[in-house]
Image 1 (cartoon, rainbow over the protein chains, first blue to last red):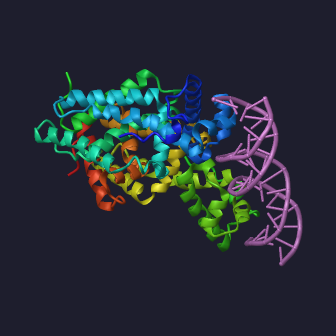
Image 2 (spheres, helix red, strand yellow):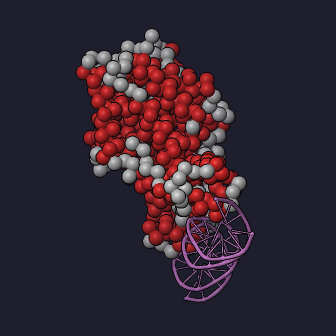
Image 3 (tube, rainbow over the protein chains, first blue to last red):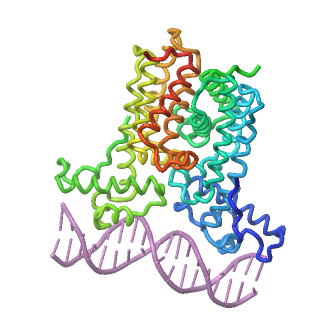
Length: 220
Length: 220
DNA sequence: GTCTATATGGTGATAGAC
DNA sequence: GTCTATCACCATATAGAC
């Protein structure tokens, strides 16, 4: 369920990477995340990334061969974190408890890694051509497995018979909105940034509406 | 509540535009929408737009002076349509009726104008620097007015005391998700595109969960 | 392993012929 | 009003010195 790490991410010999390499690669990926989140793939220049990483431009090509390789490396870094929260949901959980926890975790993730969420969003919005490999048959299978958890809760009479697929989209859409559209949210609410408290209030509201809307008994 | 139309959108004399001009400008804006939605502002080249519009590249500069002017023209075209649906909500409406109608309208808009939604999304995600003028004090005032409608419904005991501001974000986020993340939705569900029927099912699910979640009596 | 210097092609924009 | 020809610049990428 992760993007395959491209061959050129390994050191030329195939041995584990050295200290300098690790440090430099990390600095480059960090800088690239900032730039890709703000300008997308095509809109980002290797030069800007190099300046931000405080490394010669040619080094980026040394570590990642080309721009696409760097972009894929950034994306795979992100996606590894991404689905893990959603994997925590299990048939045996209490729906109210599990969903509340999921929403809080996802919102906290949105608060701490807004750029990760934004890069993923921009990639999908612009057609997701770099993710075709990721959005494979495996991914569909994984998604069906996740939807099956909700179906099991429905069959057990623990929640209303809503469509599990659309419920997942509601969960994803409503939580990611706080990372991706933070600029708009700040503007209309007159804030300069979303605080931890803002996000907790948002979580509480989402939990109230979604749980009640699905006929789920709230967690105690 | 609309972006000011730049002076250069008027013909040089200030008179209404001629037929050829109107036709060419429309073709350019249409082509620009496609490209900006796929590659963002920086990632889009005037050349690509010109090729898609089947016009000489220099014509774009003739009609819109520069790239930013064209982008703003596209954005203002979009935003005019955008808020109009949300303005329809009024204190005197029945909440169940009005919200159901709003969700359906918004989803139908997402289905018919996915690119519009995506350009707006990418602009906001990447910082919204071109929208600072639009996200003005006026916009905050307008937003507060919209939130007040929900507050009035709450005060009248027609719905639960949820936070109106977060409810608006839930409405925006959950409906736009179907336009912006259509690629991901199609991949996980194994569809090639979202049909009218898909969107109606999605609307029904959203309406069920959100109305019930807010303690609103469903429309008859 | 690292970085300077450079090749090659695409970018936004414009001058000036029609 | 419209479009051809061209500018100055910046993009990605690489060759080769250290």
